[in-house]
Image (cartoon, rainbow, N blue to C red; front, side, top):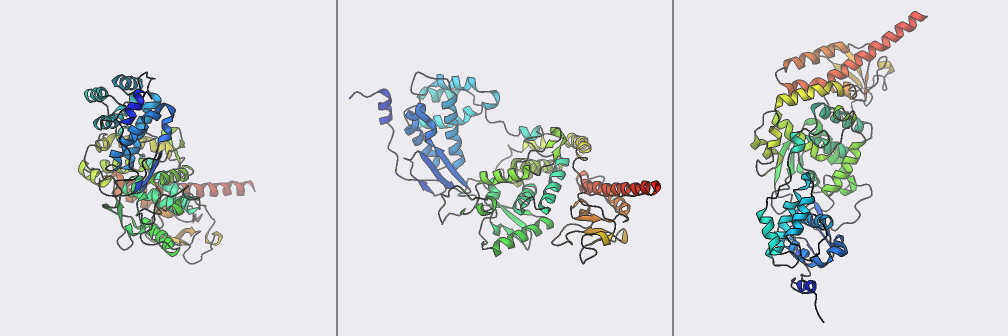
Length: 509
């Protein structure tokens, strides 16, 4: 029987083993058309049926080329290489020849948009390996062509450098509004505690979502309020081989302790996932390929954790002036970019920023220090005045006096500030139960606060403004009281409106 050229080429592909061990020490059958394996917090999926009829002839060689990466590289790198080949196959102009040659790659490069030219760099790595292994389907001339032509990389840091309102860091006004909105939504039962904690930890540590997906309950020390954040892109065996330590604020620590205690009481162990599939995913994962001995059994994958977090945060996202007062887009990367940007604005060196963000070198931190802090300062101030009216700071309800409050003077409900007056200022509808916030400053922006109509709120305002003045040389510290000041002003304005309305009603009588 006469063999076609294609059949002769396929005969040159070495037989695949019935089992391959990945870098993460898991295994799968590479002869299958669906490769699935666990790689730390990640679950890898490589589906060769996506090659379709047109790409079926490349399947054996492609599998052999990718296997060399499976044993020594991350699952995401393997998925990126496979995705690059699928994009090439689906996008490149039709060819008469079966083997991929230099003309096919040149035509593909010519049809890519400027912001997609980086795809050639990814494809290059796979095709070079293909030729090095002497696998059929790619000509040696193709590899030579790719080596001799410049392959632009993926542009990094543009979203940070340009302060992109969709993908870049949050502005100061957005940061404050989002933090406040998350607190209020949690207090009202509109946001699960795990979502609030993830938002706070993203802001506090600037980690990748895969780092939080790798967290276990034992990574937080209740005695020291220190969180050990697993490092992912280290090249080590897995995402829990090394850690970075972060000091967590007293308020967030108190929430973590309550969260941790509740999980332990319900049967979780110290080495259980911090953000487990049972907690994050209402219906659980579609299927699990993790075995009992898997270090990450019960952990959400980074993709699923990000998906559910974004979905819940989208519902409570406050408006932003940078997008014509549409709700601000919320994604884990934006928190990371905000963390790095704030460090740069506070004068941190590139080395410190890289260390805190878990970068192995300095090439990815230039974007954080490329914009002048003065430009950023002017930019935020210009936007703040537009965002402030929409990001209402006072979320409570003014009441006549203590007798008209929810708990009518029950223990724990009265709010004082003895630094300005011996009189009470208002009541707490939650009787301050489990509250670790700074009273009464934080009360004014809390939805549980019930300020009294005749309380001396002006005295609180004067103290806060005086405190802000003390930090006039430090913009970041001075800004801490901005939201409470705005909230107190709103309370004073509401009280004035009530008194004015009453005056008009009495005059009418």
